[in-house]
Length: 295
Image (spheres, rainbow, N blue to C red):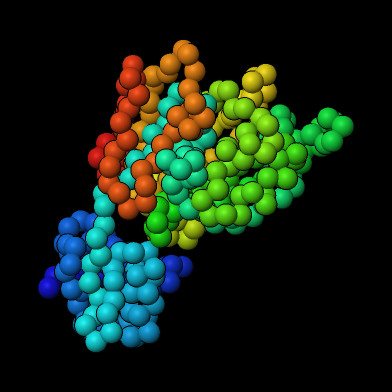
């Protein structure tokens, strides 16, 4: 069986097991190894990469957790079934980060990295950084999450909001909780409009470990501002997306009669499905992907 190209950078800050994991994942993504193929033995991988068995086992363990391989005692590791990148459709109507699946919860799972009242970046503090009396104080509610399709990490997102939204945290602890669903249901605030900026970027030293990629890996960054019914900004967000796992689409159409909350929030397919969402009528959809093209 073909072995992945050994390009380990032993002077890099990235752990060796991580580099091996990425080499194997890249071979799977490129079709060198296909679903059901047996990976080389641990002994063969140790010899190929010139590393200890502990290091190889660490890499395989993370690949198994991500659902990229399965392991069977006494038989070895095999490539698991992997769908193509799922799709995140951003309609022109209100949305932040395609929060809803068919049952009203997020189709992605979330892990909260931090949440609470903190100093805001200057660009967010100028608008949402106000105290209880409405005076500017530079503080607000900060929510940082890593989001996954099944077990596969796909998105890192940070939200900057007025401090009153800190009360949503208990409702967001469930892995498939929807932020914007909670904003409407719990806080009684309807998101009426969104403004987004989408750009190509690369993972830096902070993002790389969170997205489980190497430094310099191409990503797409979606920055958004959400406005309530009075036109007041109530959320600034920055989402960093692994486009090898999640394609980003933009739906430029809208229905003047309005859209339901679920429609307005954009759509993800169910985890581990490769089905593309159908665009709304009177819509044009533009796909933005790092593997195919950027338009």
